[in-house]
Image 1 (tube, rainbow, N blue to C red):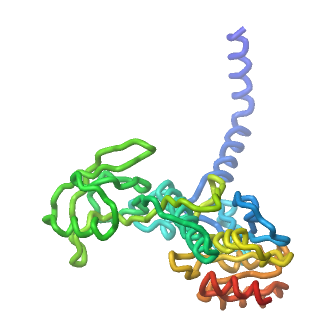
Image 2 (image 1 turned 45 degrees about the vertical axis):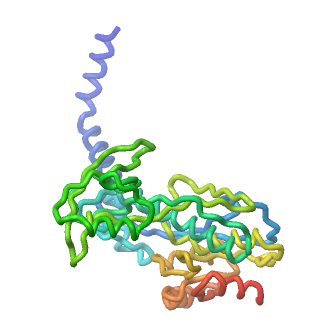
Length: 334
């Protein structure tokens, strides 16, 4: 039986090898990933699907996002024909030459965690609700190209030479007390396991560092309780402002949406300042396509947003904001 299958298979290959070569060549050309991303459009995400906290809103708050795909040979060529597509080299997304796609994705997930923390912090403070910080975690978002260490992006720093890392200032103070080129023993948490790594102390621009750039992730105790449920493929910090606005509206009795579909973008920091983002033209187009009533935009991106609205004759109200409080005041008074 097996001999018969083998003979038939061999006969099939012999009779169709030219077609198979053409097929495999086409498959390679259509699916081979080039070292580029292509930004191909925008969309919106209803935050009702991401926040577990009681709401009395008659409208909705929505994140705006940019659709990004890996470039293949056909899409690479099409990007030169479609003025609404932007081609970006992976190397421009990476911060250093020693990074790969995994490092980039890990960093973007950490930025999402940080944005979520700041969103909760600002919303609860402005709403006058209980929020207590119990602990914080220092996680590596990227490494300097000149660093000499076995630590990876995404690792959580626990201690250096047995000295616990409790805050950033103590961490820097301890490093400054050591000699340059000292080899350090660094304990990190990786995939929920404690691992011992090494790092060599360097001096760059008169500062003693081990070439790691960190982000703080906090553990909060809040009342009322809240849970966020973002998907595994959602990342980045550009939704922090809108998330904070949506949480705030759930914490107060009034309904700031007033039945409107509200879309926006922008980072948020610990002081409630709304920060610049990328890809705003796609986000404006996505918000307009989803029939949003209002698009909130950081002041740094406002000119591009207005130019996009005018260029494509979009019917959407674009509102410039610098702080979370400004957005709350606008919705309350309009």
